[in-house]
Amino acid sequence: MTGYQIASLPLTAAQSGIWLAQRLQPANPLFNIAEYIDIHGEIDPALFENALRRTVAEADTLRIRLLEEDGRAAQRVEEHIDWTLPFIDVSHEDDPRAVAESHMRAEMRRPVDPTTGPLFAFALFKAADDRYLWYQRYHHIVMDGLGLSLIGRRVAELYTALAAGLPCPEAPFGSLAELLDDEAAYRDSDRFTRDRAYWTARFAERPAATSLADRTPALPERLERRTAFLDEPTLAGLRATAREAEVSWPAVLVAAFGVYLHRMTGNRQVVLGLPAMARSTGRARTIPGMMSNVLPFRLDLHPGTTVAQAVRLASKELHSALKHQRYRAEDLRRDLELSGDEHRLVGPHINIVMVDYDLTFGGHRGTVHNLGGGPVDDLSLVVDGRAATERGRPGSGESASGGLRIDLDGNPELYGPERLADHQRRLLDLLGHFAHAAPDTPIGRIDLLAPEERERVLGEWNATARKVPDSSLPELFQAQAARTPQAPAVVFEGRTLTYAELNGRANRLAHLLIGHGAGPESLVALSVPRSDEMIVALLAILKAGAAYLPVDPGYPAERIAYMLGDAEPALVLTATGDTAGGDGPTSLRLDAPETAERLAGQP
Image (cartoon, rainbow, N blue to C red; front, side, top):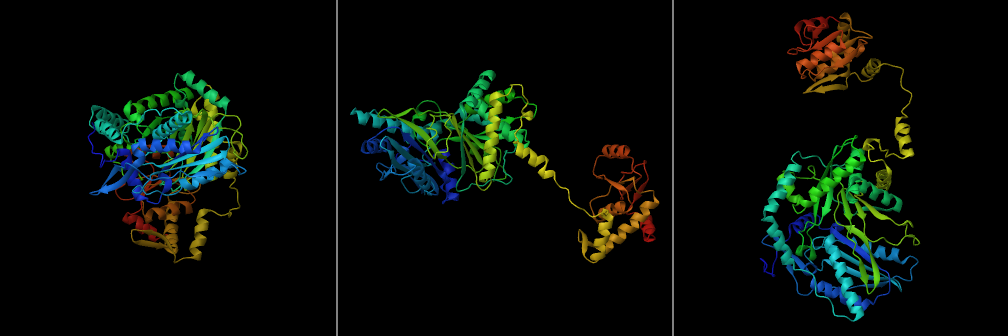
């Protein structure tokens, strides 16, 4: 028995997050998730639609309607829902798959209102007599990555039975109400309390989210994607690195991405976003729906960390984080009192998809192609470890060498095509280092720069030679004062000095300093609060031909004494209340009455 009436159900915590985000940006299509399955063989479109309609009838989440009741979001499972399955023949095109993908991406970019149904879309493309592409798109509020695999398997299972004339296997899905019961039981359990204690302790220091962007990310309406395939030798090397460190090989991928962020930003504490299914074992894992969570994955690194140490750190963190994966990031943000975009919990995401659908449709193999995994405001690295796609087809741009598919999805407002391509190349190079470098190699010694980038940094950016006036700074200032004597030069707390006034006061003080022994090859310490007087003194020291040593009068007395003892200035300029000069070198209090009298007599 469930604790809910079928007429109206609350949202899962994951659904609530999507609901609020979509309501803030109702026209944003980035809340769609989509993929297509390449079926390598001839199928019967009518039988396929039959299998698909049976699956929709079995899966509660595909028949929900979102509504608001008393100001709160709720959902209702409909008995029946109207939808169509477009059948599109692209087999006559020069590149059928490219044309089909263009249709898919156009449909995926269509905003979907979660209060209207259906919250999914399907299409079947005929690419050849023996090649069909099944497109499926869902609003993220009804489906996550695990749900996609459950739907795909069920359609394949039903189609296979129908094509063979066999009875359809019993529906494997539980109800949406069961999924809600499971979540409610978790949130009332000791496990929830233990998970909360783990995460609040792990992030008690509130480390800043790491980003490769130079601006605060905001959710875009599309993502820029770069796709590459990791060759088999590199993949074999990564597996060998994992064996050497006695960890699972996905830990190597996570470690490498963390090291990349550490090296590119200099941050020693790197916090990634790690998508997780966030379901208990058993029944909840058989129910399509939206339950996934994004875990804050933290790695503490420094340049001396070795490759093997980084991999073991990542493995240990993966093990701990996944043990507590049901505690939601939204709850942790509240626990840590984080609010707004300026208090981000995670930076770029890394999503390692390791579930092989192992799909067959009436004996014909199906391979899965991800098109979009939902909202990302910064950068997302998607490593697809499922069945390899076909390589080397005309116009595909795919490698003929096989290997692991790696997608880099970036917010186009932060990462343009060229910048995204640079990150992709460096990441692939770094994975090569992790595959072939000695385990005791310090990560700070791994070179991320291509030869042309190194030349740009060391040569081009430092090629700053240019002709400059053969004049000193005081001479340049004197010329400016002559050109604009009445223009404001310094403004401080309502007081304004013109260029003429500043020049005159600095000249008088410079004469006084010279009388105290200041000049070329000597040093004058300047220990006065930030003020217009400080600017006068700084310019006067330069006019006298000396160099200045800034000393913050707010420093501890011991530090000031050390600085003055080490530098041995000829003179220390101070103000009333400042004891920086001590009993050491000669000091001159700029605001003392006798100093004012002496300045008045200077030229």
